Amino acid sequence: MNNLKVLQNIPVNSTVIGNLYPDVVGKSQKIRLLEKTEEIIRLKRGLYVVNPQVSDVPISTELIANHLYGPSYLSMLSALRYYGLIPEAVQETQSLTVKHSRTFENCFGVFRYFNCPVDYFSIGLTQQKTGEAYFVVASPEKALCDLIVHTSGLNFRYQKECLAFLEQDLRLDMDAFHEMNPEIFRQCAAAGKKINALNLIAKIIENE
Image (cartoon, rainbow, N blue to C red):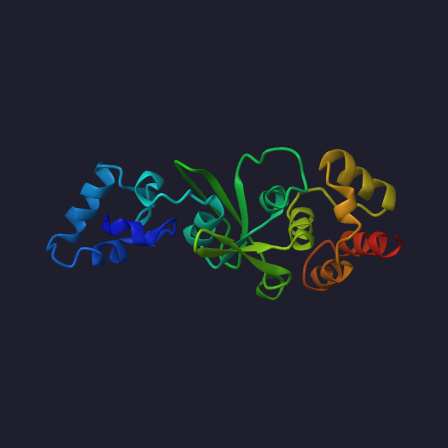
């Protein structure tokens, strides 16, 4: 059995990989060889994932996003697409973090991170399983809040323009929207920006 199989699709640092080969003296050289033979794939300096042809476990961009820069959670268009709430494919993997905003690019795509305050960060998060591992993702409500908060120039004041954005621009599943929890929007409004827009969404849901 290949030593790397135990890692499945979980991104790990070079120390973890080196520890799989206790009899090898030159750990750094061994890791370079594993990368050269494409048994492991570099995500960024010092962070790797096992090639799915070796692990027999599919790559999870959601799990990669959590490990690439953290603490962070999958959100915005990426989370809405993950839940099947929007029809279009998403061109980058979007996450929120309490750290500085950053962008990473590797063979699995572009990973973009948006900064948010600590008290806002923890609202409306959930865990989803991929293989034997879990990643943190925004609830549908939080993902929509994050998208609105971090989209420049988007700050609707009236129900008509709010619904036009959701139905026409996002092409959001409106049946699912009307089942969302308005309390998450109110909590985000209290802790973040665009207070009027988020409270308006909560009001629309409550009036259904």
